[in-house]
Structure formats: C-alpha cells, structure tokens
Amino acid sequence: MLALVRRNPINEVFEEFDNLFQRSWVWPARQDRPEFASESYTKNDQLVYRFSIPGVDAKDVDISTANNRLTVKVERKAPSDVKEGDWHFQSFSYGKFEHTVSLPRGTDVDAVSATFKNGVLEVSAPLPKATLPKKIEVKELAEVNR
Image (cartoon, rainbow, N blue to C red):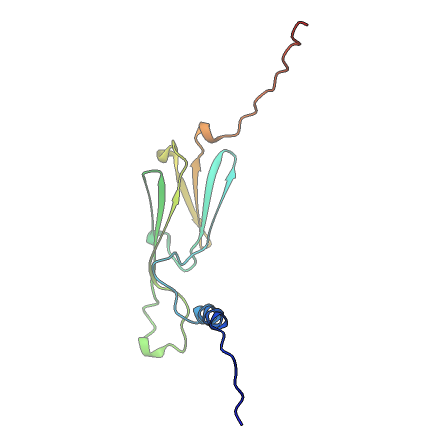
C-alpha cells in the first residue's frame, strides 16, 4: 500500500535554493566578475587597494582612472605548451578580467602609484585633504549672567 505524503510548495522552493547553491560550487565561474581577490585599507594618508592576481605578468596588467574610478584590467593567459586534449582537469580561470573601484572625490590621479610583487598588485592613491580625519576642539561656553 502506498502512503500519501502532503506536498508543501514552500519546502520545494527552499530545496531548489539549496540545490542552486550546491550546484554553484561545481558550475564554471562567470566571466563577467573579477576572478581575483581584492581588499582596501588606509595607511599613512594613502588609500591602498590590493589585488591578488597570481599567474599574471606585470605587462598583462592595465590600470586606468576616470570619473573618480580606478579600473584594473588583467589578462591571464593559458599555458601555450599544453594541448587542449591533454588536460586531465582544469580549474584556473583564463582570459580577460576587469575590476573597478571608486576613488574619493578630489583624488589626485596623477599621484596614483602601483607596484606588483609575488602576484599581488598594490595601488596607492593619496587621500584628498577633505577626507582625512580632523580633530575638532570642543570649547566650553562661559556661563550666562544670572
């Protein structure tokens, strides 16, 4: 004899979300998002952006600024000495990638500098004076005559 099971459409929706999440670890990466990690911090009145781009030569990195935005374009090339049919598996991402971040308004783009070492690109931009922290003194008012 067959047992009847009550169907709950809400549970099916949650199961589909779970399945989608699990499949996303297996599906190939989308090519329209950056395939490198990035971080940003402030140090010595400089805004520093760091990008992890292993397997890339400095000559394959293009950095530009426009409209208070910093854009990093990278091309990671596949090894030319391995034939297509010789791969056993492949999880590296090859191709052109681009990542854009905002710069504070008033940034002197002529003073932006970049270094590249051990697969890490570091871009430094001087912070505009208006964005630097400033201590404001609090003055106590004299008592009003009674």
